[in-house]
Image (cartoon, rainbow, N blue to C red; front, side):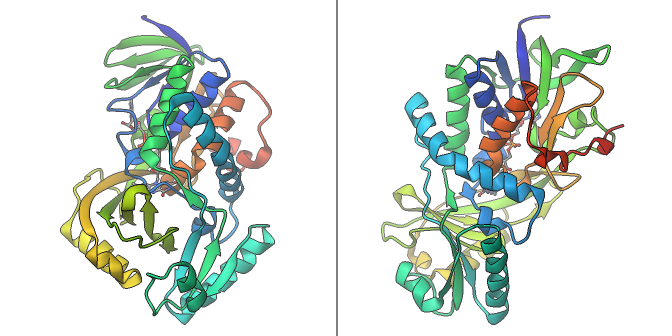
Length: 371
Ligand code: FAD
């Protein structure tokens, strides 16, 4: 075997890099193996929304985790900027959930009641009140739920900063290196076989996004992830069009620094094909024009697609194998991996260190799931 590390992480997306950042800041010897480039897949494609209140309409165990994760961003952004010089453009100006008709407005009222019960701050705005804040929004929008604690970051910058931070704390980053096999002896992880040779370690974390199935099947035959492709459009405007993101049932327009507006995203199940369809661009643009008419005068920038990693169980896998010591899963964060990345890093680092981790995730990773 060649070099050895305490922990080997398979996958250099936001999840793998966040875990590497947390572990290396605590002094562990870590390596990240990435078959392509750091932040080359879903983590590069994301809009970077930190949309706890935008995304959750009712309670599930991930909601609590998401709230905790969102709360970590101000400190994380400052730490990454100080350590790496990379600005992840963290903004906490809230997100507006838009209603175009009475049915949607009623639904938003219902969601607001639930969110207030959970202690989240939300404000129901009339169309007029909304347009006082965001004058470019269309006149037919009848109301909005303003979620002031939600925000956004530049997703690829977050992953890049986490990787640099990890490297500055001693993590070895291997790009262009695919992990082919996880090695074990007597129910203990001993290393990995990669396209660049074999490396030893006592712990392996599978953080391979939508490509995790083959590796996750080491845990349980039914474990796996699959891709849910999403296409996104970017346009530019010198004229300010929005101060904060608008969100409507998975559709959003997100104002980024420098006059960039991200418009997304489509949802296409079970495909690894990242070709952007003309029809999808038309759909996204028409919907954006309806909500923000002045976007029609914006300058075309670019479009792309990425593969959200969904788990077979609908919840991320985060935990250790009960029978194979040192084998950990951390994949399947679907459409909220950017939001969930800081808490995931800290949670996995606690787990690796054998610290008590809050019981919250025991529901996500019940022991009965294993064979
Ligand atoms: P990835 O970023 O896909 O990283 C996995 C990495 O593992 C890849 O780089 C891959 O090359 C590597 N890999 C796989 N197999 C191997 C192997 N055998 N050996 C070595 N390397 C391997 N989330 C939010 O929170 N907010 C958003 O606004 C948001 N918007 C999104 C918009 C779009 C269009 C898309 C597609 C996603 C969006 N997401 C958003 C979701 C978010 O991008 C994902 O949840 C997150 O990036 C998943 O991170 P990951 O590290 O698990 O996966």
